[in-house]
Image (cartoon, rainbow, N blue to C red; front, side):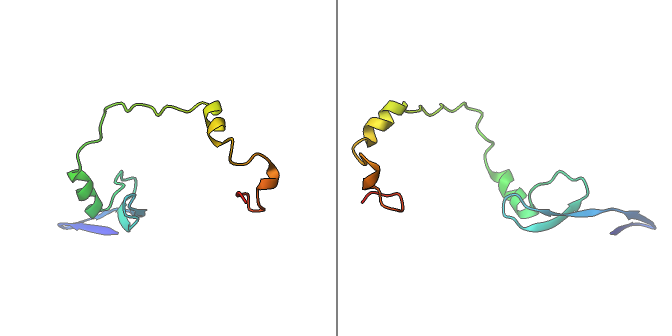
Length: 87
């Protein structure tokens, strides 16, 4: 694609890019860092900045608590139907 600037012609290359927000296709200069189309870039700019607050990790249940909770559901394999559910 050629761009005209006064009497000089400048040559620039474009690449096809998909928007990482909406999935739409658009063109950007080769090697460009834009990841959003114009509409989504404006929408993203209006959002508040991401939080830097450290979130608390979810506590993992001990395996023995899980086994006790579900111990009475199927005491043997014969109680399971072919699809793997309870009869």
